Length: 221
Image (tube, rainbow, N blue to C red):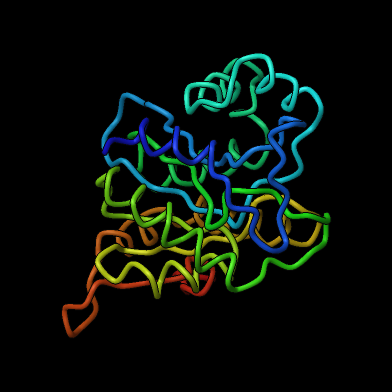
């Protein structure tokens, strides 16, 4: 199986897990699997929690162009979705840390929540991670996973012991954006410290690390 085959299976997923909306008749489908190709080195996987609400423009796009992995890819770039704050802020941050290569954008859960402020049930997280995310990470072959938000960090740190998992704050939302901006400022002031930390992928017992960048204390901070 390759990433495109997995993506085509994903968008046609017929599971209607608790706490999410999966309604192809309205163009609301599983998404959150995008490969962004770049010319540099050090490819990376970026994992969020789950996609936000699909607006009518996006719904109509999938209804017109079909439920294919290619449709997700094309919409991401054709509509400039890749430059919205969630993606741009995250991409700029990881690039500043020395990751210039391809990015696999994905989420723990591939469907949007049923309600805006609803909680994703643990069973839904469990099923989607095992059905899709584990296969994506195996196929993409990047040793470093950046996670957005605390819950995503916890799940990835526990699920992927053979990957270096790096937690960063979620880049959008009023309070969350403040935390993200503070980390970005610290990295800009002491980038050498953070880059060095990211070269140190194992702990004193030679186990692969899981760390949160915001908990590291750089000299002078």
